[in-house]
Image (cartoon, rainbow, N blue to C red):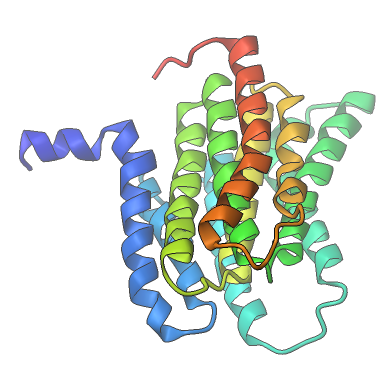
Length: 278
């Protein structure tokens, strides 16, 4: 392999930003003619393409990072089913909350099992609340394409920044890749016809960002108080925006609502930990 190409493929900025953005853009353009929610699969495709350059994707031994990747892949399959099987969705947010709770418990179990008393309950309860809420938000935002995609991008970038400052370059890069892939789909949504998001995009994207963020707290040094700030992003993205305005104006208003939360969380992590060593 030429030295230039090898250097490019191993560059963190390329892996976590340029590649997932480009792959999501191309995959979204190719999948959108299929109709339905299929274009949302571009986010998962782009994220795992980027991660394949960061680490060797295999499932044994099943480390916490690999558990997160496995959960994300399963969530993509579940998202496809949720978008293409007709059923009553009334209780789905509660079921997704429960699924997120089980997922984060499995991911942090090696640490959780060594804790006792109030410390154990705080660690478990925080994870259940954070990951469960973001998983449930995947259903809440399902029929709001622009807010849903901006939420995914903001969570990815915010989580990536927080975890990078928390001294975990790998987890931070993975989260940033999620944000970059979602940002590409935001661009597709405002440049072309309506980009239908669906569970196929939101469920794996939300779970990946949520689990990477909480893993950054448990396994690295991400400040705990940054996560409640990031958890407000899905609510901020749902603030009323005039439907009769242009897509660009609606995008600007949604970004204006969520950007302060992202900047606050990342600034708090930077203040607590200092610049990351990459």
